[in-house]
Length: 106
Image (tube, rainbow, N blue to C red; front, side, top):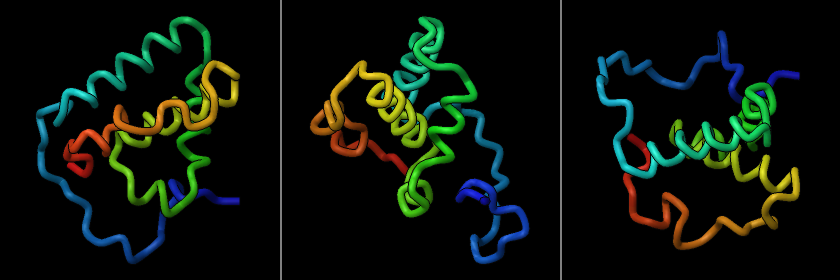
């Protein structure tokens, strides 16, 4: 079964943006998500394969609407919920990147 991230050969997604973007982050929250990922992975809460699977398991509509680091944040939340570290929806709300008014599609 192919997942939404596996779009090889699929048409209708438009042109690929090949602009050379030298900035790794476009908002402070993106860097914090990477820091959170590194800290949690270093603590052994999940591994890279679990993280990748969590991203690839996102519903298609949510995956396509999310920016790169929004996918990371969604995956981290899903893994923390799955492992009982946080309650479902605990990280939703004012602290969520989109709710903070960040430009999340850049």
